[in-house]
Amino acid sequence: MPSFAINAHWSLFWPFVRWLPQVTAQDLRADLLAALTGAIIVLPQGVAFATIAGMPPEYGLYAGMVPAIIAALFGSSRHLVSGPTTAASVVLFSALSLMATPGTPDYVALALTLTFMVGVIELALGFARLGALVNFISHSVVVGFTAGAAFLIAAKQLKHFFGIEMDSGGHFHDILIEFGRHAVEVNPFATLVGAITLAVGIAVRVWMPRFPYMIAAMLCGSVAAVLFDQLLGSDYTGIVTVGALPASLPPLSAPSFALDHIKELAPTALAVTLFALTEAVSIGRSLAVRGGYRIDGNQEFIGQGLSNIAGAFFSGYVATGSFNRSGVNFEAGARTPLASIFAALLLMVIVLLVAPLASYLPKAAMAGVLFLVAWGLIDRKEIRHILHASRREAAVLAVTFFSALFLELEFAIFAGVLLSLVLYLERTSKPRIVTLAPDPRLPKRAFSDATDVQQCPQVRYIRIDGSLFFGSVAHVERAFDVLRARFSSQKHLAIMADGINFVDLQGAQTLLDEAVRRRADGGGLYLINVKHGLWETLDSAGFLDTIEVRNVFQTKEAGVRAIYHKLDHDLCSVCEKRVFVECGLLK
Image 1 (cartoon, rainbow, N blue to C red):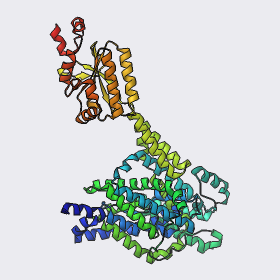
Image 2: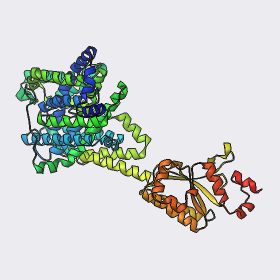
Image 3: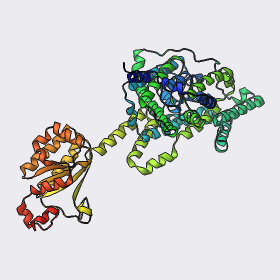
Image 4: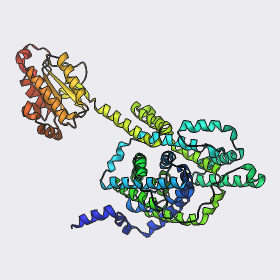
């Protein structure tokens, strides 16, 4: 086997063999320092995200261990850090809470199954080289979905922030209605702890941006809760805590392979896969641009797929690229994927040491931190930009946002993607068709679409800006009919084809039919500035055999000259418009 084939094979299945031998001692030091910061950051985030997902808190930490290592080894980004994220956690809770009670063994089993299914789909897409699929999820869909997810996160934490016992399942409006019914049951001590946590988090983010605001907020909230309990008694304050986390490494686990579960989870798995891959590849690309290198989208699919498959067997749940941790990793000076690996290993050590202290962490404090997380998810600047820049994109944003609030969350992505594709097809199905004529005011009498230039009485020149495919032929056929009806004396039609990038068989048939009609009326159809790919399609469709190759021209000058000789020169002799230079020969 040739050496290049061996390298390609190893790069696909063992991509780390390309960069691992090149790691220097300086790289190791930089990666270790970055990993220490990353490990500290993921500790409160992991617990917070697991709470959002309805999973036991320790599963958020487990999802940042083995999956992060696998994604770093088998991905292509130097800085991308994988693990639990807000969006994936919200989708998981939204889908699974309808099937089982959050936090129960049945719920965890479903989460592991979903994680495994997402991993398999991601891996299959990577091996099929379908990395371009994420391009079909527009930026407006992502912005709208994350904003909707932010509102859901905040709504689902209302009961913890205010210390209320209530059902936080269902859609956004259901949660608000349920909260209104229990508003009189607000626990003032839990609310005060949540408010202190929220205030400290905001203050640290504003005045001490380099310090992890989540850690500071959680510490202050926990201290406040302990003080209240010591002064007034825990029975009186009624402040509920998260409870001690198990000080252990990720235990082995197994997803359920029951056919009923797989069928039930299939739509959610597909939606989570699309969003997770979009998130991971987008973050990887943005950091690669800043780092001066490129990533392989297909390799990232493979890395993310293996990461989630491993997570399903090591007590994790759906993991994908984390913007917060990846950004921190980059800013902390990470140079290679070893930083993500070291961070996961350090997290294991930290969990063994500090996990029991989670018994002092109030749920109200967690809710306060999650309010901050939700606020950070709403990209207000980008939302304003989209709303002002494009009505179409604003519609996509709005549909995705409100679908996330009032429909099942996983279908919000499908709704946004579907609307994006419908609007795109609607736009491409109506290619712009403009009338052209030589403009004596321009150098060399260049063609212009100005409305005040003279038109030749016998021939009309048009330009089609767009592709001729099955979705656009109806619009083009209507335009041809209008031209024949309104300008019946212009029996010749010349199409400037430099704006046509693609023609399918139905589009070629439309041109062929128009050529036949023009010929029957005593005129002709001509194509000018035909691109090579367009020529090949027309030739394979038999178009050139019907209208003759002599009616297809590679330059405007050749086309105008040839078409002029096909006109009725008896009419030209009495015409006073003299549109073309050739018309001067009849003077």
